[in-house]
Length: 475
Image (cartoon, rainbow, N blue to C red):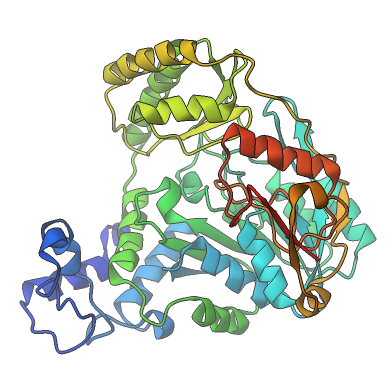
C-alpha cells in the first residue's frame, strides 16, 4: 500500500471540526445536530455532527483547492486515472455529465441497448441521435450480455460519423467482456469510450475480479462506490483517462447536474471507501474468497427450486445468480426470500441476483437454517405458475422511430396496453431494478413487448412508471 493512501484528508478535516465544538451561524439548519426531531436524534446524531458545508478548512467540491482536492487526488492515484471526481448525486449525475460533455445536438452515438436509463436521459438532454447496439444472447448466462469488438466495429463502419460509444461494464449481474479489444477498435475511429462501470468499483483489487475499464482503454468511467464498496448511497466516482475528454465541458456539466450544496458525509464516505480499497490486503482477499466458496455452497445445496449459475473469468465473484426451477419464477423465489428477511438485489422472470460485500458479514450456519425454511415454503408455492414469454427479438442495430427533437414537439396520450402496439412510446418502460428500459422512448411498440410487459406485471415485477399496470403514454 502506498503510504499516502493511509491519508483520509476530508474525513480527518470533518473529525477535527467535530472536536472543535464550534458554534454554527451557517446552514444546514440542524446546527450539527443540536436542532433535530427527538424521534430521530439518537440515530442521526453522529452523522449530523459532521454534516457541514463549505466553511473555512472544508474546501468546495465545485472549486476544490484543499482537502477535497487532496482526497480526489488520492482516489485518482489509487484507481490510476488521470483525474477523479467525487459525485454526490449518484452515478446518474456522472453519466448525465459524461453524455453532455461528449455529445452535441444532432451527434450520432453508439449505445449498448441494455444500458441504464440515465444514459438515455442524457442522450435526450443532449439532443443526440443514438444507434442502439444489441449484445449477443449468451446461453451460459441466459441474458443478452455478449459485447464484442466485431459488433462495435460493424456499428462504427455503418456510422463513421459517431462521436462516442457508450458501454455498460460489467452488466448488473457482474458479467464483463473484452473491453480492451473493444476500446482499441473504438479508438481507431478517434472517438471516446464512455463506460458505465457502476458495479465495478472493486475491480481495482485485481484477480479474481475482472479488470477495470480504467486499465483497459476507457476514456470516461463512472463507478458507484456505494454499490460494491463501502460508501454511502449516492456516493460515486467519475474517472478520466487519456486526452479524448474535454474536461472544461465535463467540469461545467458536473456543476449542472450536481447539488450546489454537496453532502460532506457522502464525500467523506468516498474518501473512506478509497482508503478501504487501498488497505485491502491479500489476506483480506483470501478470507473473502474462502467465505464466497462457503456462501456459494450453502446457496447451491439449499433448495431444488433454484440452481446457482457457475462463475467464470468473465464474472464478478461478488455476484451470485440463482436460476429459478420447478415451475417457479425468479419473482416468486425472491418474494419467499424476502418473507424470511433475506433481501436479494433483484429478480427477473427466471433469475435472482445476490450481491456479496467485500468483508465476510454473516453466519453461514444461520443462513443455512433460514434457507431450509425458505425451501419448505417454496414447496407450498403453486408450480407451473409462470407463463414463459419469449423475449422480443431486437435488431442488431436500431435507431429511434422519431428523434428526441421531434418528440419534444409532439403531444402524448395515455392508452391501455391493448391499444399500444404499433404506437410510438412516449416514455421509457423501465423494470426496476435494474433500471434498464424494456421499451425505449421513441421506439415503436411491438406486440411482443406488450405481451412481455403484461407477463412481467403478472409475475410481480416492479416498474418505474406511474399506472404501468393500466397502460402507457404514446405519441
